[in-house]
Amino acid sequence: MRSPRTTWRPLRRSRVADSLLAAFVWAFQAMLIFSTDTLTPPLPVMVALDTVASAALLWRRDRPFTVLAVTTACHLVTVVTGQNTWVSLAATCALYSVGRYGATRRAWIVALAFDFVMSAAAQLLHLTGGERPAVTGTVGALVFVGLGQLLRFRRELAERARAELAEAAVRAERRRIARELHDVVAHHITTMNVLVGAARTTMSQHPEQARETLLTAERTGREAMAEMRQLLHVLRADDGSAAASAGYGAAALPALVARVRGAGLPVELVVAGDPVEVGPVVDHTLYRVVQEALTNVGKHADGARASVRIVYEPGAVEVEVLDDGPGADVAEGGFGLDGMAERVTACGGLLRAGPRPEGGFEVRARIPLTAAEGRTT
Image (cartoon, rainbow, N blue to C red; front, side, top):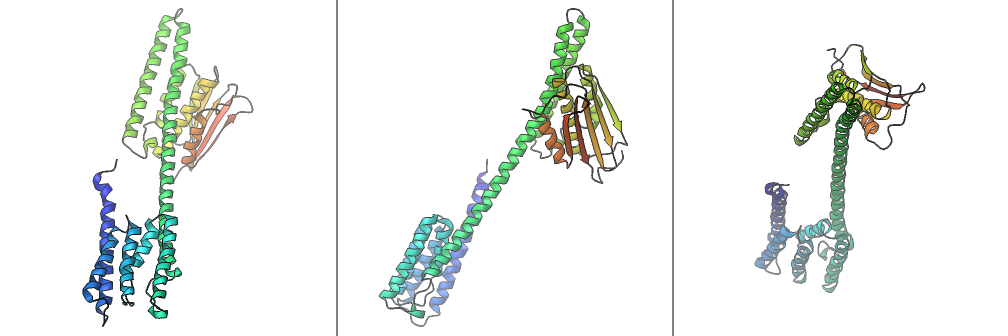
């Protein structure tokens, strides 16, 4: 929610700008008045008209049509009384304000009406050429209203673009949160489901083994809660790098593999090449890709064996997760593979996932590393 100070700040700026504009218009028209040898009407009346027309500009944003009526009336008084050399800068500013802040159709109608009134006044007073009152003629009125309309449309387009960017950022943040929640919840719940099922089938014949399995499921539940709290803490901190600071990276992969292996999925971890220091986003992406791939193996390839391979190259890091299951399509209807692809793409890498020709399923990701990330640890 915006604070009162923030809300009133643009209003204060507009009032100051309008006050300066009114003062400038008054000074400019006063200079013309005092530079004229003969005045009709008298000087006090001219100064009063100048003051009224200039002061009306203070309300040009809120009531542009009323301001145009006031400035036009002041201008017509001088025209009717014979003071034809007064350039109505106030009416010019009012025409611009009508186009800038008034309704589009009404603004153009008023511009044409202004032209008609000023032209009629010129005809009635038999004014021609240089004697015609200033700011008359179809071109003059339409140009100033059109200028206001143009700037108004540009402002609206800029605001619309900012709104679209904000909506895109919100959608991206929602997708990121959905990926995080999916990775956390799906992995741990899948593991707990496997453990509880194993404990149920062995409880009658091997109660001690079932007890250990249930304890492992309990620890998995606590880990899920801890990871959820950490994720929520990062989100409450309003940190744009939340996805990169969730605290899980390549260093946590051995523990992840051990936990999955303890849940009954045979899996081995191989690290090839010299491990290098990678950025937090890449580090977190490696962990989430392996976690989601193993979660899919547990859900869709019951009884399969899996292998995880991390390869550090001079300019990139590759992660490979293979299984020898039936090779079902695990991407349909879920966040899993889509989330992995978005993570890897955000790091500038490529993800390939699909059934293997020899059977099973594979997930391969290759993420390029910058010079700073490629330092050997």
